[in-house]
Image (cartoon, rainbow, N blue to C red):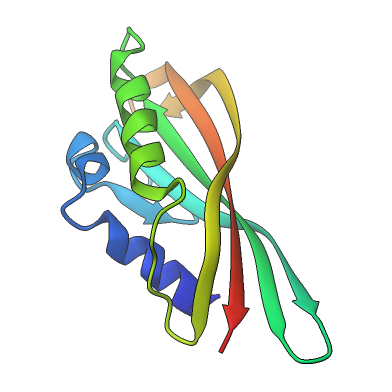
Length: 136
């Protein structure tokens, strides 16, 4: 899993999504008081699959996009750039061969988040990608 997470993080470098969020991309959780917008990504599930001769891994990664902008333009741009970056992408993973990485689901919501200045409403897009790899 470490190699997969490293490959994903490496793909963010110099991407439109990284620019959208000022480089605020975090594994597992954002730091307290993080400035908006930002992205958090984490593993939802990982299932090993085996045949008699081959080993595979089927992983679901969620990218949570957060925006405090009043309108939807900022978060929809983030979503479009995330989709362009990862849906059906090429990804080099040490020790594995990517079979596919594809968009698997989107859930949109508005949440109240407590900040140092009080409660704030933010847009949250939870975007799931399925990643199927063959282990080398």
